[in-house]
Image 1 (cartoon, each protein chain N blue to C red):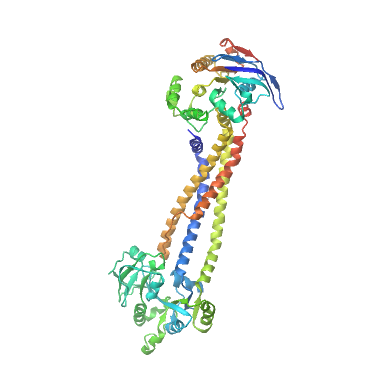
Image 2 (cartoon, chains in turn purple, orange; image 1 turned 45 degrees about the vertical axis):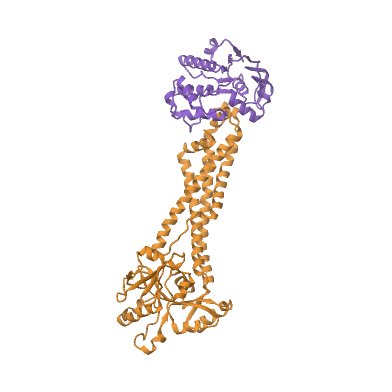
Amino acid sequence: MLKTQDLQFGYVKGPSFIFPDIHCEKGDHILILGKSGTGKTTLLHLLGGLLKAQQGAILVGDTDLTELSANKLDHFRGKHISIIFQKSHFVTALTVKDNLRLAQYLADEKQDIGRIQHILAELGLANKLGQKTHKLSVGEQQRVAIARAVLNQPDIILADEPTSSLDDENCEAVIQLLKDQASAVSANLVIVTHDQRLKDVFSNQIVL
Amino acid sequence: MNLFSLSWKNLAAKPLSTALSLILLMLGVSIISLLLLLDKQLQNTFDKNVRGIDMVVGAKGSPLQLILASVYHIDAPTGNIPLKEANMLVRNPLVETAIPLAYGDNFKGYRILGTDTSYVHHYEGKLAEGEPWDKDFEVNIGSLVASRLGLAVGSSFYGSHGVSGEMADVHDENAYIVKGIFEPSGTVLDQMILTNVSSVWSIHDHEGEDHEEEDSDHEAEGEDHEGEGSDHEAEEEEKEITALLLKFRSPLGNVTLPRIINENTSMQAALPAIEVNRLIGLLGIGIETLRALAIAIIVISGISVFISLFNSLKDRKYELALMRTMGASRGRLFIMIILEGLMLAILGFILGYVLSRIGMMVMQNFVATTYKYEFTSVAFLPEEWLLLGVTLLIGLLAAIIPAFQAYNTDISETLADA
């Protein structure tokens, strides 16, 4: 469950934003649409606890992110929130498998190779386990990023422009994959984008 | 997956810059380790062999040469001294013990020394097998001589003229017979062939009659062979030895005797304590230079570790932000970078330690074949704990600025910039 109230943020030498309230029940998916400069990324970073809101509350379950100390916030993020970025990034020194193990380790979860293999197999990546991430195609990288996002069964999956660099066919496939995987772990899926193609896919929408 | 394996994999992912840092660390550590080892060996060798010898009396020349030749058996002797004069000194009331040394020959570079049993007692030599020498041409040999030359009790051999083993002039009239072998003692006794003084005399008396033209080559026998063999009545008076090792009854001997000997006799007196200090002082300049060089290399290696971590962090800035979004705290990233620095330092130290031991073995071989000296201990020195500490400190210092950078990474800004 994800709720925000009276969320505000202003950059020191930049724009200030007042965001509309968000309300998602457990397992709901929501699309946040907005053009450049409307504070999309800022909102995503606030929801992910990467930025500290200057005013307002962000409730994930019963926890208000804005009231957590820095270390508790890091720990909470690892356990409950996953973020998928427009361009997939990994720890380049590590293999696909170790990147996923790192996600388990950093979130203080059990390092479960079985679960890693299971998820990669589900996303058609079973044979990429031992590869370095930069050897993968862009599409494969994005699927590994999705696998990493659902690995620890988070409460919220935040996706920043996951489709903007994809053609129509791949766009549809990735969105379907995200929805399926989020549903499989009953997580709220929050997609922040300017990609108008997604307008028809989500019933729950907020326009910035 | 944990911070150790993560740091390790980060290092392994950049083999070239990691290797550069390691090589520099290794060089610095190995040079310092090697210097420490050498220093210890030298001190050990010098101290052990000089113990209980207050003064050395020999022919005039360089006092350092006299000490090196008579105590350490490295350099050539300065010449010979008349037995008559030497005996007058032995009777001096200030002298407690006087050990005669007579050089002449070597066997395959190991010196054959004419002396008496007081020499053996002085070095606390014990026979591992066989019995003490008794008659002329019977010898007792050191443990290294036995093992390096494959000699056993009952073996016989011919000495070659001189002390260095380079001259091929073999005395093939009289064979030496090994009567006993000493236990290893860690002193010069290990590399000596001991016999009585009269064996050395008789070989060279004989020689003097047969090969007078060679006398100019006899550096060990010294300056003066005139009249030898021509006047048998005077022979007792003409006998010579190479040097005397003296121990005094009281420190007064140190004060009075050297002046008396140097001014009133044809001999010279040298005090080992002074000469050894002089030698170490001379070597010290070289050792200090090398040490400064090694410290410079270690500092440079620290800078190399710093630059390599700093550069890699610039590339990994996004990775660090990513790890933060995956739940890593600032502290964890800080520790990860510190670990990378420390791992480099530990690995560099281990490699340097191994290299220093290899270097020591090579040097050992060289010293053993050239000077017939053997270095023994290669154990971990107490000073090397300090070296390990300094190396770790350098790894830590090199990592601390990059680690603070990682600590202070602004996740949101970094991710938004990418």
